[in-house]
Length: 263
Image 1 (cartoon, rainbow, N blue to C red):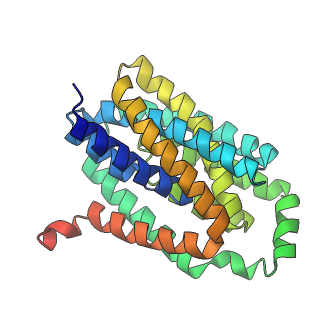
Image 2: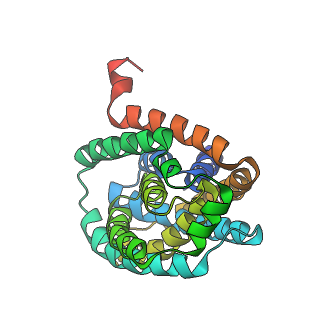
């Protein structure tokens, strides 16, 4: 039975996670431990978390679209391989070896941090006019590479999910050179679509707590609304700052540095 304290804990954690997921990624690194702390087995926590992520991304998609940041054709094309990958990945997620994958995730996130700071896309796109042309003329070669990568993005998202936003940002930054605002708009749509297919795997296997899931969803949706407004209003500079802080903090936790420091 949920207590008032637990409900408040879920909502506050959900708001923070929804904001992080919409602006960059890694919100599940807050919500997953919280659900396990409340007594859920890891597989159930993994499945339950996806309900909140579904609702969160619906809110973010609607807000980005309302503000004019939405590319339906590219979003759908990238979602197709992501869905296929997520179904395969979710089947592995039931017996997820947490410690090993947390370390792998930390390495991935630190790699993304290098990309965020280095900004390799600046070598290819120098002006907003060039950037807009690149987004409107997405070559078939780039699209093929992106679709292949997004199968593995979907696999990872179906498997563990936490931090997948960073991976999507890195992939789209290198391949498309789009602004982070447009990348975030694409990201939330793709995650929503493949999240639906992976959630079904958890539902069929009975690894979902619906009450906790929808309670968390209220918090995530609120955070997603705040995060999408922040992304549009503040632009790339502030998104980049949030990403750097989030990646450093979460990577340190995943690598167990807080234990070495006695925290």
